[in-house]
Length: 228
Image 1: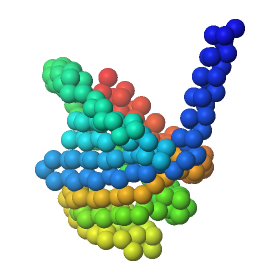
Image 2: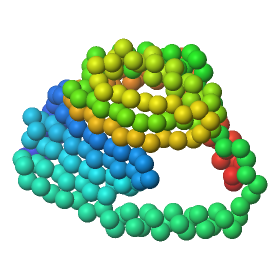
Image 3: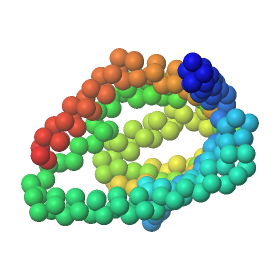
Image 4: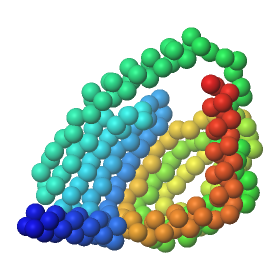
């Protein structure tokens, strides 16, 4: 009986912590730059900064994580995991080269985004902005796609969001006719998880987004069938 009582109290404590996690604001600070290499650094803290997590990513690989409960630094070594993943990836690439098939035109996720879906996304960003408006936001970059149509699409989106970011130092330059994505950004603020989840769920359940998700899944399945 005593064991069951302890387990019951432990379960209640875990549920209480989870409720606090999704209800209390989480503070964040993230910075990234992409030129020849990509680097992402960030800090996330919750429970009035009792728990803090610092992380660094290099070229889409997590290179460093430091957890700080009550200000005590606990580094997490992930270098071994990265080396194992790299070796597995290189082996897969070699195997793929051996059994290579005629290449099909690469499918782009942008092909499944129509004007209605883009309008839904812009409306989603505008609605969520009042809850997630950062204290600091600095963006400087250059973007472009092989197809100028998609670059123009990006220009429409950034122009539509200008009223939200006009008070921040944001500079995004479109490059027509070439595939490029480079620059740097810094963002700092706080979010409430429960609010974010509600808005995201409403977005996913909207009819245009459901249609887009189905189209993306269909294209991915067709691409996998072709590769296999």
